[in-house]
Length: 489
Image (cartoon, rainbow, N blue to C red; front, side, top):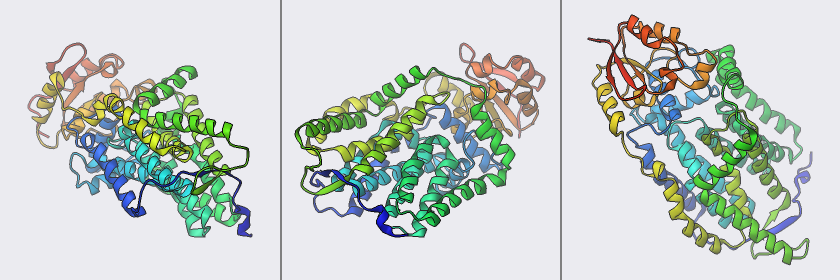
């Protein structure tokens, strides 16, 4: 069919003049990538686990180093491509203690550069720079792309998929459609929470009315998911990544989740929120003063359908987050890129925006000090780590706070990598399972650090004693370290 089907829609405005001077696009891209790395480096190098997921996925990578397979011997609640990507990142990280965090860090760079490229293509250099800086410095993105999570890699991939679809819209070639489909499929094979991005990807792929191109993109997306799932068994992948996530577990009121969405954005992503509010206010003022159908600004036009598409992507993502059974703060990585791009392409007063961001930056840094300047283990956590570090080489351990094992470089027995509440609620982790795992003579330690093991698994102390473990240290409340005397794996 003719490519004229993708003719430009009416313009809503022209983008402001560029602030990037004579810097080449690649120089700006490299600068944004370096900014993304710089703000993530302290947490990337953190000597302690930062949240539960960081520890769970970190120790899962250690288990894969030891030869355990995803879904078979390493429980995975994420999509089938998640652990393979972490494994590849670990290889790139030379299997150091930071190795499991390499893939998320690369995803942070990809999300930053992808947001820059999308906004630049839609509204010019200034918009691109704004979007890149906002994504690079977003607290939600830093949290999910400097530690081991699934949300960070999914967000990085999905931004690149939207970028690829936009490139296809402007220059339709089959290989570009296939690339967009492949990257979108990879994002969904990591975490389905990014599904709303199929709206801009699908629309831009369809914009040229090339059914063969669209079908090819959908085909490679589906093929990639199955190719990443088949090695582990479709049944296992379905049970752990789909049935598990729709089964028993925490369910929160939707109004409470909306409040959580807004409050988390207001604290972690203050710069993004400030930018979008300023952009919306300036747009409203300009609309009231400018006759309908005219444009303002000196350089580049912005298509109304592109603006609407980014707005719809943002809104549908927010709706999906609010309506999911349990919204966790890491999930907000899905909404930050479209929100930042929307703010960037709506910005009419870039110099005023810079002033606002400078004013807000100290407050934002204060809100994010835990992730921007993480400390090491202290108090009883440091005491526990001292005991775990003294265990013999190749020892195995189990904990309801797997991050301690990750940073002690200890693997777990099969399917003991994830001690989440939801697994316990669904009886996928039981006292009997831990008792069987503890019979392995290589199992030298069990760490009880929360109600998950201290209360939610009845009979666990007696089971551990039957397997020859003894309480070596207590740390107040439920916290205790169980050790096998004279353990020599």
